[in-house]
Image (tube, rainbow, N blue to C red; front, side, top):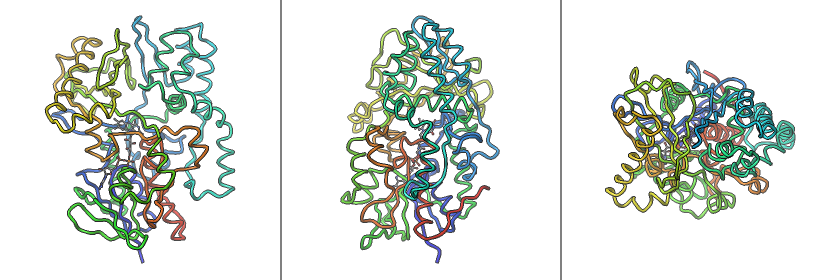
Length: 501
Ligand SMILES: Cc1cc2nc3c(=O)[nH]c(=O)nc-3n(C[C@H](O)[C@H](O)[C@H](O)COP(=O)(O)OP(=O)(O)OC[C@H]3O[C@@H](n4cnc5c(N)ncnc54)[C@H](O)[C@@H]3O)c2cc1C
């Protein structure tokens, strides 16, 4: 008899889990709170502008990176243009100089060395690491739960050449790494380009490495179009999605999952339930909080998450395509300014003129993702007026800064949109509006080989979301969905198959 799988959430992880479960003969239904697919991977309309709320770069946007295979299987890349930025980010210092973090490692080395000849040696070492990590294999295979001794050895052999670098760079913050350079602007650029100097250096180097490989493009059409392509694939495979259908409880019977209860009180039976949504909400709200794996508990209690952000976007009646194409131009401020609860030393503007589908001809969407703290927004949640006033204040400050660095900008702005961590939390149910997940410490990774995708005492329930595959992102979410489908097949003693449309 065909087994019935119920998935909670139509974000990228839920859609991916659904596609792979359908490919393997399961009868699949997704229940999604919202009216459309994508979860965090979304875009929205403001007048004639499309605000993109997610993908800056897609790991595996082209062949040559393991994730490409997943995007092909999910039907997300076929016929979709990818835009590769020549520069990851530009940092404009107070002294008027600009550091361009070129995607091409050779060009980057030449540029940085001409900017700071005294740093020739650390620049060469930095670029050498990028070239080396560009060869990192990103193998897509079995989930760690199903790896036997031979799989483990094979994986180790693949990773071995990178192990030392990954361990060293994973344990070194960007702020620490930046001290290797003597040039003050170069130091600041490296320490601040990811907006948080405490992030591990490996995060920046891996990003530059995939950009160097041209496998970190931006999918033209934006994030919602990308999610809709996977939704199409799921429906074509015979899956069903019920929108406006929040799940409020995971139903159990004698230690086994029985289905879910929806917010309208109706029950939906299932053989398996895949929670492709926030991990904390699954364990403590959809379940009663009494069954928590020790690894999950340690993560939830002590794990450090990526800082949340405020996304301020503008629809501008101007063609900004003359600006250098990059993921953000960061301007060092004369004085740090207090914005969104954090003393901001840089202001960055990212313009989307590389995607003409987001704005009418000769107009542009531009925006900034400002690091913030949940604690800044939390006290405002009960006071709508105060919350709206703070959003307006943040937007006005960003507008003034954008106008300072690009005179005439403010006069051309037709639309302003502000999405806070509260917006992301309300829209997707993710804890404290987090949009990436944990920065796992080296110690945690040595202690635990992987994050379990099952819950003790609730047989047949699986967890598949960015939270089970840190640090998250679209690839982590899609991989989580694929891996859970592999676990179902293994349990039902059937060979896992993945097809390409
Ligand atoms: C501003 C921003 C920029 C980003 N940039 C990038 C980038 O450049 N590259 C990249 O790879 N990633 C990026 N990300 C991260 C990426 O979007 C996420 O990590 C990923 O989309 C998470 O997918 P998910 O399916 O795990 O979770 P989600 O997207 O959160 O999906 C969960 C879904 O479950 C639904 N749901 C929750 N609870 C329930 C319930 N009880 N009942 C029914 N439905 C429920 C939610 O409505 C949601 O649709 C960015 C995110 C943001 C916000």
